[in-house]
Amino acid sequence: MTLINAGTIRSAASGLDPRGASRRAGSDATYQDVRSGLKHSMRDKTEFSYELLAMFVRNELSAQWTILLLALIFSLASMFWAPYEQAIGWLIIVIGAKVLLLDVCRRFMALPREEIDTEVWQRRFFMTEAVGGMAWAGFALVGVSGHGMASPEALFSSHVFLFASLIVIIAIRMTFAATVPANLYVGTVPMTVAVVTRLVTLGDFFYLALAAMAIGVHVYFIFLAKGLQSTAQSMLEFRAQKDLLIAELEEAKVVSDQARRRAEDANLAKSQFLATMSHELRTPLNAILGFSEVMTKEIMGPLENPTYKEYTENIHTSGAHLLNLINEILDLSRIEAGKYELHEQAMNICDTLDDCHRLMRLRAENKGLRLIEDFGPGLATIWADERAIRQICLNLITNAIKFTPRGGQVTLSARTESDGSQTICITDNGPGIPKEEIPKVLSAFGQGSLAHKSAEGGTGLGLPIVSKLIELHGGTFELKSELRKGTQAIVRIPATRVLRTKESASARTYMAGQSNPATAPLQRPARPTDQPADAIKASRGSSMRPGTGNRQRRGATANAPTPVDFKSGGRPSRPPRLISAKSAGKTPASAGTD
Image 1 (tube, rainbow, N blue to C red):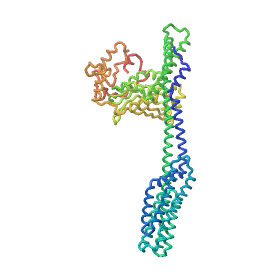
Image 2: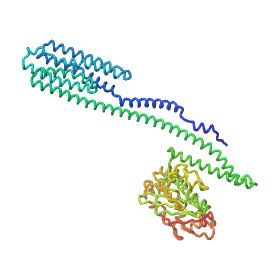
Image 3: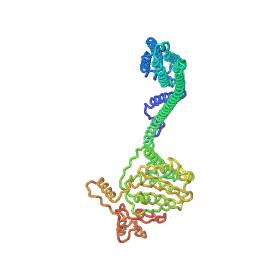
């Protein structure tokens, strides 16, 4: 006989994937990276100096040739009213200032983010932008010394062109340097001051109006630049929030992956443990049950001490209870793991309830209970796993008998609902279950207060197994109860599993072909329900005691067989039948009629 040792249990519980530790270590490192990235994103949400400087630099680098081409155009245009030397000299100064700014921008982009001090680089850009602003302001001085040599039309055109060029430069600088307001101011204010000063010195009203317009345009563009800066900051904030959300999602994914791996490891350990314990427990239990039964029945010889016989009966009963508990735990584990396979076939609920009734009748009689069958008419055949449906019925009937006091009754009913589905209802008039305890009794190993007070406690797995088995069939399980009024357990089988007339006949033919492919379509064997009462009596022979009478099943007459309605699944309608402990189970013959 195999014994259970601690090493077996430890080996079953620790039989995990050897690569689990390395996977967990890698996931922990990934988790730390995500956490550091999350903190970095949270810091960047409030510090956008680097991003604003980077936007300024990218704008300058992307339009470097555009600015140089614009300076060349201004220089060529100024040659119409200014000496060539001044125009070319101004162009060289502007190109030098632009090259200096581009060089600083390239050095900024070449450095990694961690090595950049934003305050230092802001000062550098401010100084280079100041040089560029002074160079552009020099355009207002081009041709000042040559006013006497130019014609009045050329001078007027030069002043208007100077005003237009100011607007163009301010607009370009606003677009490029809006993210860094200090650079915008130092790059545009010098040219505005120079242009306004030149126009004011002319003393003409028209030029004074142009000077005022230049100031107004500059102020307008400054407010517009502030709006662009606010937009850029909002964009950066939204991007930081998006990065933060992505980091949180990555963190949640890492946590969920770790939880999933732990669950997989735990499920593997549970499966290995149950597989090991199924063998390790059942093997010694078989020996205990077998030897205790041999001793109880005194097959090898009588037990002289009656106390020993009582002990062996207790051992056998306890072993059977433990084996039943193990089977229930294994069944529930297989269902939860999705390894419970349904072996479906055409079956009838009434037949299953009849069989369960016969199995549980003796137990009900011992408690003085009455079992009542109440089957509705026209119950069609269903397509289901007969073993699972039988287990559902047995669990519900067992619970009803267990918690119904002596003298009570348990009703086994089956009905066809208006939507075509079928219901199995087990009703008792026991003490009932408080409403707040119903979710508890439906959970695994859950027991209500009545179970703790009752001598017959149980494992708390019967109802969860019922719920899981009917869910595999696509049905539902409902438990209704009220204190001091009884309990009603309702199992609903969906209409999609109910076979109609043609489907039922085809299913019976298919099942017959599976058992014997060479036979013709299945001929329904005659049952006691379909035979005349005389035939039933003759078949029982001398085993029927006098006085028991020719009790008929399902309303059959004494002179004619009961008509069978195959449109309703091959079962005639049945009126409610009451079986009491006094009249039922007196002889083997009478037991066979139920």
